[in-house]
Image (cartoon, rainbow, N blue to C red):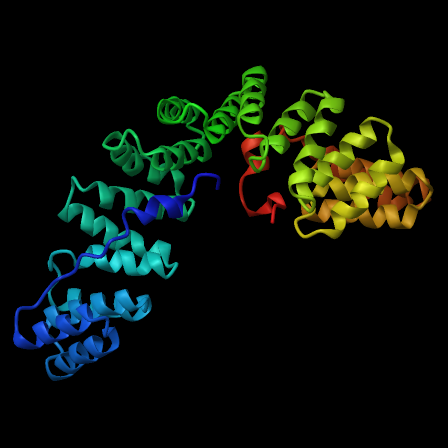
Length: 376
């Protein structure tokens, strides 16, 4: 993700928490104020041991454990407090934060929902609930909460960026473009905003507009991760292979082991009849974690052209294993098997190819998003 959600969360992850008014509470809080958090926690644990249904003590134990960074223990204490007193003010929010901070993002959603019912106008809670949905790839669910929060924070570039990305991943492209405009009012030189707009235009099959946005992003921030790859991919889709080659090479100057950029560069070099360069690039691409299907297929094609049929077949089979639904690899492998005299294998691959329908071109957002993109 290009917009830093952690930077956004840094401004909202503050712990609330219930308080008790007894002498023991004062002692425990004094210890916490002195930085003696473990002693404070032990004081609350002693109270809980004596009074296991003391919701206030349980909530405050959770608060101290959270301050110690012991979020699993904090969440356990908060849950116990809510079991005793379900409507205890602030504790659902604290539970959600404890779950979120330990990476249990799905588990944070329910307490954030409860906290929002308690504080329906809270920008903090709206943002946290939206971020929890975003962090679990529930983008359509994230949008209404992030939008409510963003409307109250027009100058928060990070928040509008996460909303724009959620809209993009939910294929609500006009929403992305609306947020792009808002981001530019805050930061006219936002390369990230231009890239988001470019991905949205690509999703709407407006190739010229998509390309123009990425070209603008490149001018603003030539070292921005993925800016050259995105522009190169758009050129590649338009068969502007010389331009695509330049952009993929620029991306690789910024990150030499970007597997996806190497794969597309190798394919581009093949199309430009740069056979030796293509083979070297593809050999490097398939050795990297995150190697893409296209790299394996292209390497198989190159090896087949050199008469290295067994190695070529193995590479094509690898490409098919990565995505059995792509027709091109089945046709290529069928023809190779035919040339190798493997008639039965060839017939089987031709039959698979005939049964498949060629998929539509993948959008730029599919290429640039998710853990499969080969960027490390």
